[in-house]
Length: 353
Image (tube, rainbow, N blue to C red; front, side, top):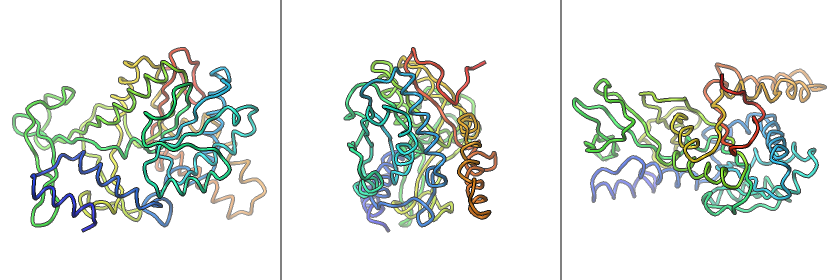
């Protein structure tokens, strides 16, 4: 067993099955403390690692958004879950062509892992960066926030339909193996469907809802916008999306705890509602492929490939296709913008209807 798995096993042996969010939080902290879990040599690849074009387009989106805010002399440029720092590095390089943007931006990275902070510091060498354990310690003021594949790593609750009611999944032990244990819940979340087949699974991410609520309240009060990009859907929906990935392959969810990436698809429906209730505007969610196409990914890809030898040009085109194609990441990932109530339509989105 990994150290975190051994610690969880000891807790379960002493206290009984643990709520799934507690297990996921412990596992996530241990997993990202390892450091570089990204890229071909790690367990999974995110969009900024696939192509520099992704970060460049997001950088220009940030600059255009800053201009729409009235070009404040100082604003907070925040990224949650910045990984290796690739997105922020590409963003800053591309946005440097917009006069005044870099001078106005105060960079903040929300990252708990000391090992990843070291990687980010190296990637952003020469930039003044402040690190935070949570959004709460980022100073108040106008803010442009990015969260790419951040929400899907937050701990979820799972509920399983029984004959008469819903039970919440906990994690227990059976012959030294971790197993899911349904625990009857006398007060399940109100948004669970009253009618569902026995064995149906519903997922709720209270942490993501709380994050978006706090984020939207800040933006509504202080000004700014946030771009949330993640694997997900616009619910409500039944179905189990919790998954583990190790060395780019699916892995048993409760196997090798702390040594595999645990994620769940994001239900954007409650996040949209939370942001609106908090007083912010919401745009999207849009499919990532559609969003990037509106930002001009085709034009930028052609520019980047121009003059390259055939193999390199094909590699650049393949990366863009992976980001945008329906059978790649184009439909799987959604993009949502949370903005100040008076903000104009952000780049890459269209008005509903």
